[in-house]
Image 1 (cartoon, rainbow, N blue to C red):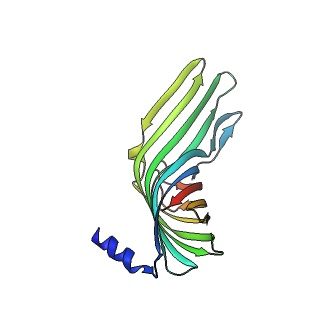
Image 2: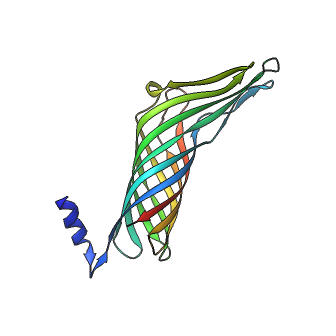
Image 3: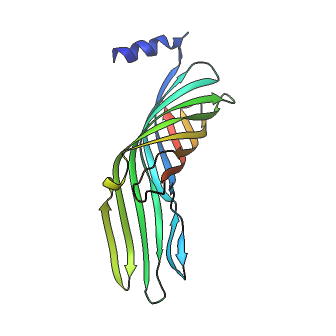
Length: 208
């Protein structure tokens, strides 16, 4: 606590606050690279993006009017969605979702193109908190709704990069647009396939 107070005091010039703390909430549209549609003779499986969210806090540390650094700590859900296509003699409508939850720790360098609009880029370290595979639908009139833990088939840490832009208003509200690229293999399914996270995010936040 004492260290935070000292740093906050040091980074204040003529009463201007150079550290701003805030909270943010976002929508994630994620996918896992490595899965490929596999449909033969009208049956198989197709893949699509999965909706999720992020929530947490940040601190923006300004060095000049144009340059700042923004550390973030977010809880974020990611994953992939799939749909099974059954042969003509089977009546079915079944979807399966890989749901991965992380604590994301990122540090973004921000460059302000204008007083309010900034470009941001920086690394991210993600720690897995849960991993589940959920199927839901119907096969030959029988309802399916199952969830299984796939933590053992999932990697505990993901290293990635975020790139995006944000716009802040004078009264504290900010809006963000971001794309996250994962570099780590997050699933242990096949030795010759690398599965990596891809996340498109929209967020809104408030800085105090």
